[in-house]
Length: 493
Length: 100
Image (cartoon, rainbow over all chains, first blue to last red; front, side, top):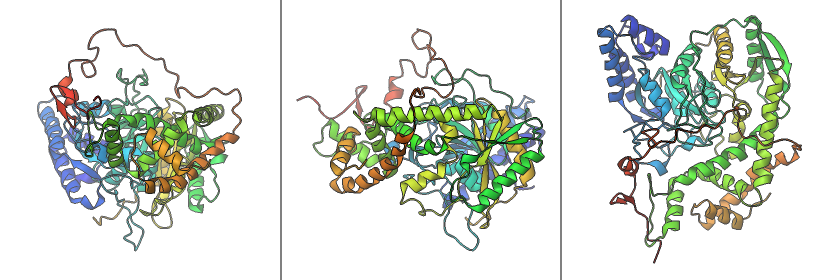
């Protein structure tokens, strides 16, 4: 039999349904692969029993002639930001070491209800703060990709770096990610896979460890556009437990997939042509334009004049929300407690947080605390929220002349671990193309477009109107059908 | 905006993060750099612009005014809430003594 771990979500689902193979065979194949991939450090916890239990349930249902659930037989990886009942959940931070949730996040529950099984919890940047997966308290995730003739470890992107590495290495056919400023799209681009962040409010945030609540959105990462559509259908949906959840039916995105863009207009924003952008990224962007034109779309130039202010606005808003959200880690109710000899309550808080949070998390909490402090609030936070309104207006104006936008996903291919970690701002600049759509709450996805001269993947980003995930997925599919991206990393681990 | 070590210590105290003098000296230029970078927002004309409150128009819902509207977030789940406490006694979270 062919290697089952070469199959994606749709192929596994269909094969289990038709009886070409059993769900247990699929689960076993991935479990072995996960166990052998320790050098990638993609998994924080492996849960083979959970994957097998879901697989047995699928096989039993099929044997009994029942209608199979939408994801029956499909094992997936779960980013460690999602609380999973009875399975340690840390957000890759020491401050949550030993935390075992007594409840299940809505998004993960939705996936289990759809029949999916869990292979394990995926490593990530600590509290989803990072673009290279170097801020995890449990070690860097390594990308399965390498530069030719070099064994220097490359960044899998972040913050969903465990998810991107695991999917690209074939350790799971799909995984959950979360995206606050690009944390699904940039790692997908770095590892040659697809990933979509839906419209803000599509996926419930209940039970997902909070970073910046007005930006955080869950979404799937998988090998192709169809697999993303299938997973997103299972993850999304109204949830009364999240006050920002949208009361909207979940469209049947998979059934609606079409790579024909006749009658669609694709906007190309001139402000994304940034200084110092590598030639290869320019060339790929042009190729993407040509592919979408070939798919029947009309290409239009658009302007998003406030683009350059998106990153600085983001680095006020996200840390401000983080400083508030992360105030809950106090050593009293869950997680780490540091109680120095003779310490009072306030000392215990400060000692616990000093010991539990990593440097990047502390940096962002302190920036957030500073911009929200008395006398600075209006100058920083209120001004940033006004700029955010202007950024959202830019997009609204663009929608008058186009249906989706096409841009590169990231300003470079994957960099080596350590290459940017000394300079926070250089790291932040990696999200230059993904942050504006996050600030506006828009659906956006990354699909692989090609390889750079070093043989590393590059991604193209499609941004859509609010609630138009279908338009985004279809443009993504049109690129996928024309890019012919089949490159896979060579197994070295 | 340049941030000095005294400001760093004040912010750290507000954020309830213990830091050493060395941490403060290291963080001061780092935070100054980042704050200097985000200050370019001062140059944006936002006269008459309302701050963003919601990216997608949405109405705040009220839940039904009943006990245990949702069994997961309602009452009667003390043991579940306490299950991860670093220290708990008699159904209470315990903290260092705060009153003499």
